[in-house]
Length: 171
Image (cartoon, rainbow, N blue to C red; front, side, top):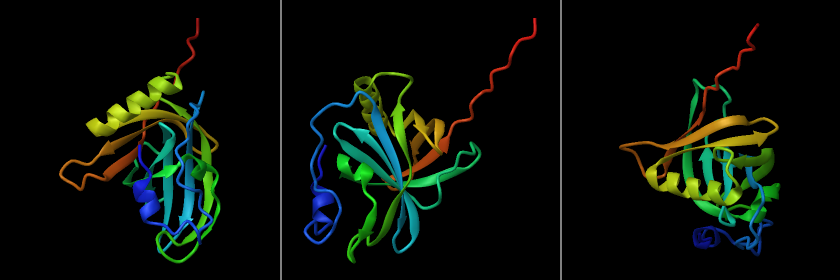
């Protein structure tokens, strides 16, 4: 994982954004965050912790918990792990605007531990599709990211999976 693009797009001396550092210590639980970003156009930055950085997608509309609604998600540069807590105003230049945390929590893939979940996400990034379980305040349940075919490599769909309701048997 590299933060080269993150550094290249910012003047970190004038911005209050986190420094470009890769987290060294492994997490027992992987984090996700969704940041509401009032830039030129309001959008939501969805971030998943993977190998010490935050894999990131810009979602032009509020993430949906309705399985029938698919949201475009544009993959952007990796962000430093510490960005998960960032709230504030980014000065004029790249990404200028106000950022606040819309939701955050933990995630896993198929109930696996953090190391295996990261491997599954990395494999899914290469294949163009993966799912994960979010445990946040607003986003709960199984979601997937699916790369669009015949589109730019960075265009994905963010989709809430329809979960089957368990029925109680009456004996």
